[in-house]
Length: 502
Image 1 (tube, rainbow, N blue to C red):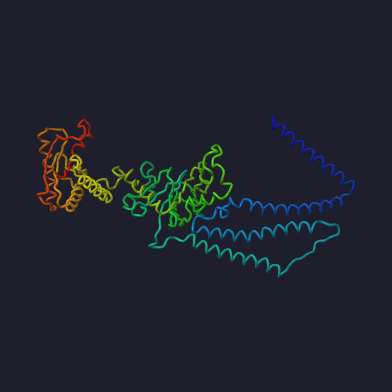
Image 2 (cartoon, rainbow, N blue to C red; image 1 turned 135 degrees about the horizontal axis):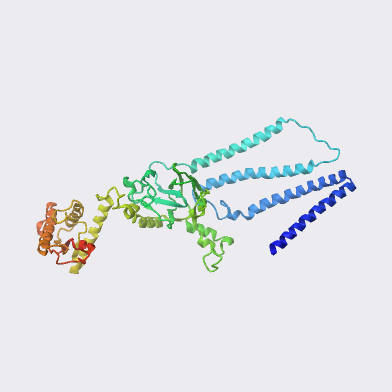
């Protein structure tokens, strides 16, 4: 009903305006069209001047009123090192174009006023003026030269790549409908290579080449993880896309680069303002002192809830909005802690290792060998320091034998070499090497097999130069299980080799 009443009112107003126009036409015929036309011209010219003044004032005042919500003004100074150059370039461009904008409108409306139609006045034919042509050609040329030179200086600073040997962090952003996959280098500080032919949406959605050893410790953030970067460290972002055109946009850092399928791009920037520092800056402005969520008046204020964000600046589909991702800029120390936590869970180890996609399925990798050495060293030190007899036993988790045999598997050499190093570092320590089996088969045969395996480990250590007086080899067969023999997993746990510190 309300909409019907509004429609009726608008219809009535339109009818009234039409009737007023008809009345004015009749009045013009009565008074004389020439006189009415002259008055109309004077009135229109005056209205145009008034409109010009109001329009220019509103343009300037509205820009001033909203300056604190525009990038580059108020609290929104650039949060990156190169951002100041871009802001300066925009400001100097705004300065010159603002002058042109204001003068053009003044001349435009003044022309409409001064040269309004008047009875008896004729236009002056003015075909050519060399001086005016020099002015309106020369002045823009000089201004454009200033802008182009300033633009080139900013471009060379913003688009410069990293120099060989320079200290920087390289990450990779891959856009697709509708998210970003972010990849960080692992402990080696280097990103592995990619090949689109290797993309497998189930196991390898980024097409990472696992035969490149640099890829093995790379970290791929999950969709809910924040991007984290340190303040003051140069960052190089590899930017790619898997389906359509996207755009890698960090507005607060003045970073914007297309993500193009089949054509990798990059951007280099250095964050200079942490998230907390930016929040402190926003706290000084009253419009940021209101609740971030109107439905939670007691919740965090806008400045407290502020986060840097990564957005896609291309209309890449109906789910475009969901490509927003949070970026946190922290101090270098906090970044190192965060990165160490992420490095503890590399994508290859957690998703590829041991599967059909693993090109090293039957090999031990460098990081695994290193981790095993650290693990055994820690376990041995703990057992050595303990006074409890039960805690004096160390499980040699990575000593393996061929099935049903006392022959050591070649992968066992790493564990036994690590043990050799530990014993050399503890020359007075004596140990008992203990062999165990599960309950499958004959108990006597199991006892003999476990004893042979313990002696096999002993012989390996003797061959590495460990004194025979420091080693005892004993087989316990199936007599000392640590798990149930009713399950395959339990039987595997019972088939073990241990050392006991004497």
